[in-house]
Image (cartoon, rainbow, N blue to C red; front, side):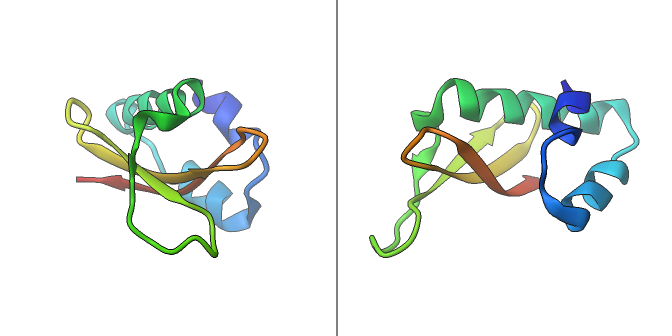
Amino acid sequence: MVAHARSRPGGDSAAKQLDSITSEAELHALDRALVVAPDAPDAGELLPGDSTGPQLRKYVDDVERVRLVYWVTALKTVVVVAFLEV
């Protein structure tokens, strides 16, 4: 699944961050988080904010101890803003 995530456009910064992940546990955590948001875009908690920009959501996976901040476009494309290990 990570190979698929790496093939998505995201700029040099995102590619460098993905390339820096070396442990199997980190790859598994990233895969797990990236699968949830597209499959169930409303799974994340809606973060407070104004309606002038995208409505950010936060998905927390307590098993893998990761947090994903993302927004969903009108066409239901998921745009990941941040991936954090907690």
